[in-house]
Image (cartoon, rainbow, N blue to C red; front, side):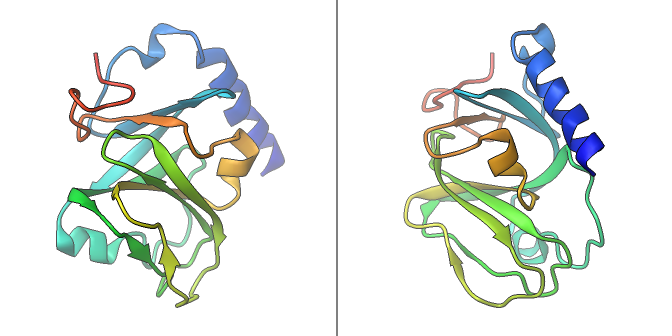
Length: 157
């Protein structure tokens, strides 16, 4: 686990200034902050049924993957971990793709409500504890084609 994490972090640092981050794709997100840049392969949940299912019953997830929840408009987004088998970090983002809040290490099977707050239009779920290890926090910027380029803090090019 530690070796895989170190490999991922080395890749993040190596890719930080490279052309690998030049284009957007629907099956991945790029996120950047003072710590550098990272890329995650994602499944997109952009309709009510997909958002309701989320990562339920998924027994494991590779470190460089996640799920991006996309809402039609900014709103209060709340989550829980019912039938979710792995710990997750939930990264809440406004309509411009800027991180507003990070909930770290949501516990598997816990039905306690996790409130992302108002104005959330996107939520990125990644493996629990990874956001802190990378350094992802409020103010960081996420890039994905679902974010309107005219409003995006970090538009697709």
